[in-house]
Image (cartoon, rainbow, N blue to C red):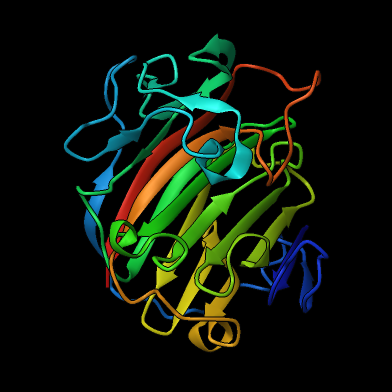
Length: 280
C-alpha cells in the first residue's frame, strides 16, 4: 500500500491543503490512463563503463568544495571528483559514495555533478533509475536548475526537485518547485510514501514530465503530484519557460534534515542505473 500526500504548499508549520489517496498497488484498481506524447530520446547516460571509471566529461561537470554557506543549506560535506566518491561499479551503474573522513577541513566527502554548460532542455520528460542511501543526515537528490542561473541567480532561475529524500525517512520521497515567491521552506512540494518497502531497498524510476502549463512528478510511472502554472502563480512567478540542466548529489547534513548521528552508517551510496531525457 502507498500513501500519496499532495500539497499545495508545505512550509515549516506544515500547513497547506493535503489530499490523501490510499490504494492497494496489487489490485490495479487505480491504474492511470494518462495520454503521453510519442517520446523521442534526446540525451542519456547509461553509466556502462568499467569499475572505477569516472563520469564522461563530454556529458557532465563537477561541483567541487564546500560551497558558500554549505551550498546554501549549511551542509557538512566536501564535494570531490575522486573515484572514491563518484565512479562506475562495472555493473552498469554510477555510484555516489558519502564517506565519513577528514578532508579539506570537512568531516565528510561526497559528490555533486551536473550538465550545466553541456546539456539543457526546455520541456519534455526527464527520468533516472536510482537506489537511494539511508541514515540520519543523508540527503540524496536528483534535480534541475534553470540555465539562466548565472544571469538571474536563484530562485529567479527556477528549481525542479525531481527526487529528494531524508535518509532517516527512507520510505518518503519528495518533490518540489522553488522559484520567486515560493523558495526554501515555502516551496511547492509533494510526497510519495511507501508502506511496504523503502527507497533504499531497490531501484525506483523518478521522473518529471514538463510542459508550458504544468509539471508532473512520477515514481515508477505513477503520477503522484501535478503542479500547474495556475497554482504556482498564486504564490509567485512561473519561471519554467526556459532550458534547465540536470544535477545529482548526496549531501550530508544541512537544514533540510539535520546532521548525522552515531546511528548513521558510513559509507553510504546512491546508485544510478541511468538518466534519460526525452522530447515530445
